[in-house]
Length: 316
Image (cartoon, rainbow, N blue to C red):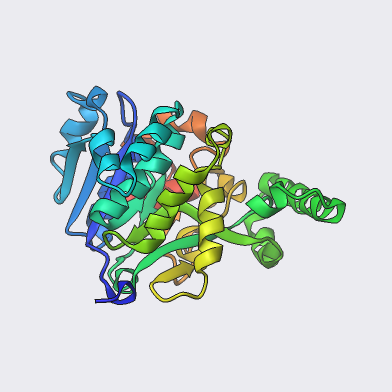
């Protein structure tokens, strides 16, 4: 059977490095198990998480499984695995290590990888029917712009970035941004990535990780979105690979995503679009300090005045 017709397994995979998994990230697994149409939702974690409250809670959620990470064994099962092990060992940041592990995991097992700063709203069943997939987001600095020395390209990006920063701070600024978002490049993000086992698109990602010069591997985004953007451009239009438009996984893109956490009147139905399956809410974009404070009581208290709490309330 061709890869274009191979079904993506009905498994969702999350990866976590650290000794604690905050409540809001457990929400990602619960929502995927409840709404994603998956037979199982697997949290791959380090030994440091063993014995935690998080694992005890997740053990009670139907279809959720937890599994210890064995990075070396998983990487060695991939093509030229010894080189991938060397790449992995040179990385220190969890985000960089997760970039390598998500690709290795999808290559060896297949399924749908999801970041922990997501909330799943609808089934992935139909998205799993036609090979590998990911989604696009609206950004200011895709890899090509970030690496460009053209003054016009840089000036245009500056205007886009300044406009986005203004709308980020304005009440209801997401509405104004939606009216102009088509002026922003739509490029792939790896917070949601699906593939059948041993799909050549994921194999190409692993190859790109091996080929990247050692000095470049620790540069932010190099092993993640920038590599994915380059490989996705190579695969654009080929059978067995789909890039879903921004509303599917990224209805509010980076920076504008801070509106999920603004207080006011929560009109969730206005922000979500008919094709939205999942919301990636960008924990790394101006929301990091909020994460420890979010729990079930916080969600109930704010559900009528904050978009994120309205989004999360059905899973609490």
